[in-house]
Length: 118
Image 1 (spheres, rainbow, N blue to C red):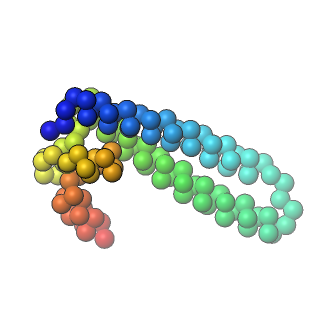
Image 2: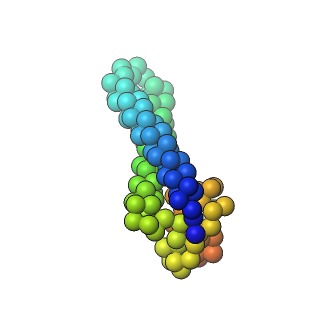
């Protein structure tokens, strides 16, 4: 069970990361808009911009996914369920939460879910 101070610490980490991701999303979206407005002179330019757009788009998708996970974790803090595994309902454990603040599963259940996804 996490103490009130530990919960506040995790909440602050989650909020700080949310601010950083929102800033990253704005920056990457602006880069994509700028790329769309570029005057491309040859196939090399098209290939370069296309490759950059693919990478930036992948980053956007990953960052949005993490943002959703952060929001879910913040909701759990408000509801009093943060730090509890969604599968077995046992405590996730502070060391795991330190590594991944928005962890939804304990180590054992995470391994089970990863095997099921493969």
